[in-house]
Amino acid sequence: MTQIPDGQALAGKHALVLGVANEHSIAYGCARVFRRLGAQIALTYLNEKARPHVEPLARELDAPIFAPCDVQKEGDLDAVFRQIAETWGRLDIALHSIAFAPKADLQGRLLDSSGEGFGVAMDVSCHSFIRMARLAAPLMTEGGTLLTMSYHGANKVVPNYNLMGPVKAALESAVRYLAYELGDRDIRVHAVSPGPLKTRAASGLKDFDLLLNEAVERAPIGELVDIDDVGLTAAFLTTPYAARLTGMTLYVDGGLSIMA
Image 1 (cartoon, one colour):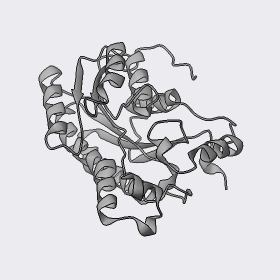
Image 2: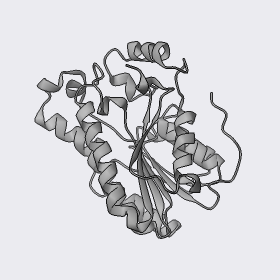
Image 3: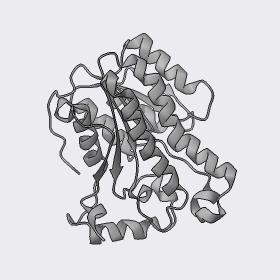
């Protein structure tokens, strides 16, 4: 496990983290680092089935805002932002770590994907980030940072990643366009692209264990990254150290993406 440094680099900052499912979630790794560096955290959970897995994490992070948020459910995302406005009055960081595709479309070939399944994947995994940005921007009165999670399959063919490749490519493009549109408001927008990680979402991919093993063998660093590695990179992007960076996709993969 990566060592998280102590410090107050995010003291006084308010951070919303969408997409925590359990203690193995990338979103939780990011929230944990944000909190360790001094930020206050707003955390969401998908539904009542997910709540018992996320609520202990919210307590651990002293999250004053803990709310349900299913981005497919009308009004849920708006309600989260209303609570942020009422509780904090502003927002500095919003992190989106949400992706979904119906199992049949996720595990089948892109060629065979259904229009409905592709549409659901695009809405949940990409357009919900745009909706989050639209709601977050008015609360980022002193500037801020919007973050989302991508994967190398957005740019190169990764066997068995299937329709999520084009969906993540759209997400990375959305990051660039939002960075352009929000730049004059001092709001920076990034995608973070982790290497293969043992998360519940990733386990839905066909032959994912083979992908993990290959990553260890091929990455120059020779080991998998963990959720805290991703959190540390996300935190860096929200600090003044990254004040002149926007619209980027940053790889956190031990160098795996540079290999032929």
